[in-house]
Length: 208
Image 1 (cartoon, rainbow, N blue to C red):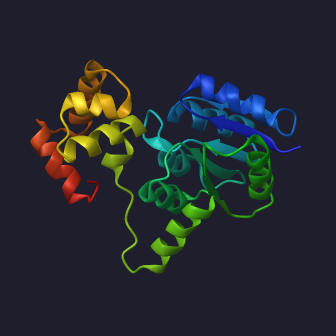
Image 2: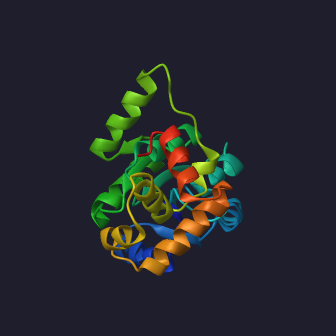
């Protein structure tokens, strides 16, 4: 049976994945941030790590950097289908990338294939990888962008597009106060002073 470590910063999501996988694999460890993930992976030596892209402590790419090379293979499992996320973890050493819309049965098959050495991608995401690695200017991993959570990235893009806080709250189904909290967090992490600097930062990276 394939031995798996599950890395995601949401406990409820990890519980859901375990329930979906059932007895098809053996979950030998779990982690919710980069440091914990590195410790659990090194302690258990799993066959496959299901790795979220956005994690506290530097993201999935940082886990890959600190663990590889090893016999363990990595399959990214993320809510994000952004090209920069897919390319970033593949360049970091992941053997595949699937989104969280995947079914339990499909995820089990993806884990088995990665454990056997295959590369596994959701069809649309495979196109990103092929296009990126065929191009002369493969985008580099952006350590600043990688430290932002998926929700912070969503807020960042909307801010850069000129949305007001109330419009962002309506778009993302969150409160204005939560939007303000995310914006403050993004400004702090990127060491920027205001939303105008934030917009310029996003535009320079073609995130708008």
